[in-house]
Length: 211
Image 1 (cartoon, rainbow, N blue to C red):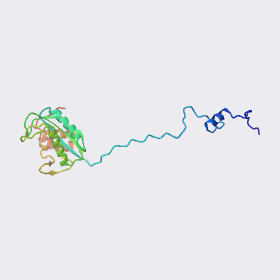
Image 2: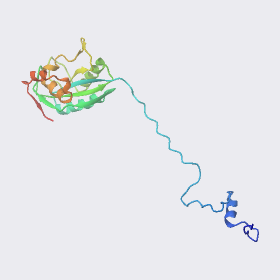
Image 3: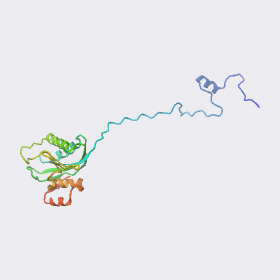
Image 4: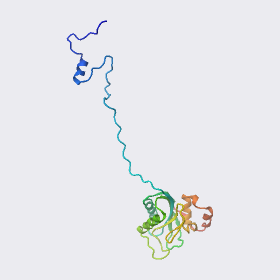
């Protein structure tokens, strides 16, 4: 067999010489040189995932709150109250009714602006009532005499399946089925909570949907 020709001067070929200087093995005969865009080295590592924030896991119940106001800018007060209820600890507003205008019932002063919100809350009924009363106070609610006009009125209508009768709280709200300004907004967001017969009984009460 004939042997491959070698350089007569005994020097290594140009590719082999360059590989020797770099400390790399010379490319094998017939092998393709790496493409210009290829990179050597270990595979790229994925960026570590960002740590997730603390997760709050707590049991919640569905509750409904009636909102009313008939002093000052009542529409703005009712809208602000919706946002404030959603900002309460462990509480999230899940539905908001339209705004309604109604004549005072068991109260004095100009027409009321009314609405109802549905929430999911981790507060128990007593805690939730206290939080609502604090919002009334922050809005300037005063009680100089029974049925006085109100800058803000927040009534806890239902709290899960709670049935409570105490000096400070009665659930479900004892007069909610007697008031169109409660039943109409409530029926808008939770029709299963309002019997048709109850709605029929308040048809004589004047209430107007405004937005």
